[in-house]
Image: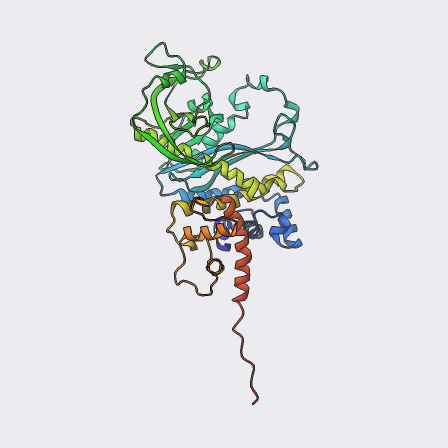
Length: 464
């Protein structure tokens, strides 16, 4: 797994080649033991001190780290006509780290930490390319409890402005010949976002939460939900697999769709500044939920053209991939144990976060690439000695195949190392079992390399 770190981070610019070399080594170490502490990942006290010095170095800005990864992300996305730019926010809890300076409240109970807003580039069939943009901030303790006042502020002075800033950053990062679809959940249902000027290659796909005022042909219909519910349900249905999420079990879900073009009116206190915005609203309704389970219902708002059932269904499939950024944040927290980092300042935490973000992306990328392109060679992700060790251990043999196994086969073997049972009812392995398996594989590969580095033993001389 060494080569990928050099490819991904070897061109990072910190003004000192030694820092770039340390950066590559640090990513390599963390990727080998993503669940371990920094000392466990670095393997020695010298390596651990070097990691902390790296995150404490003023030349190592978080943006310089992110730029190196973003450039590779854009390279991976090139040649694909459409890219999903999925946005979401999470928080990192450092309540137990009383000595860390620069943190702020992250909830109403006064828990301390930082907020992270990420934009993850994803292929149209659900393979993560990497991060396009990320914002980090700490709330001001002094402004806690001023929610009513914040409502009256202009959008530029609110935290919600991050959604608009991320669109602007994505527009700058991605070439104009790539069609970018901004995908986000209900927190992004912000009128200013819909009214934001966009180039022709940028579209929005946002789940609605507010029942906004609309203008449609029927003057009796003044609200968004009732205007879409008045449309006849489609005769066709769409069935898709719903991944497991907190409170929701994984299952296949069948939806009916309704859609219509609506003109959304600006909120009363903003109508002088903003004109109405024309969008397509798609109401997505589950038809046959399991017994005792409330049917799913989503209302999506999009700037994409929707005139046919297949176009509406495509929007639903793309929105379903929004779940990937939740998995990405989950990998950061649980797979990389980011909330356990013991660093003295929020600035150091941000440098460490930018570093771990690259490792988290790779874990997610391996998981979904193996599902979507199973026939690729495993050497896309594993070095020769790694898949040799994996094959030998899995099959308990020293006889190796002449050609590398497929990526799909290799990732299932890796997942088995991490506890995946591979029963017929288990489906595809998840990112959790893969990151655990990669940690075991690192040890197996190191031993394999050690055993095969020695020359064959020479028989002792005979003095007969």
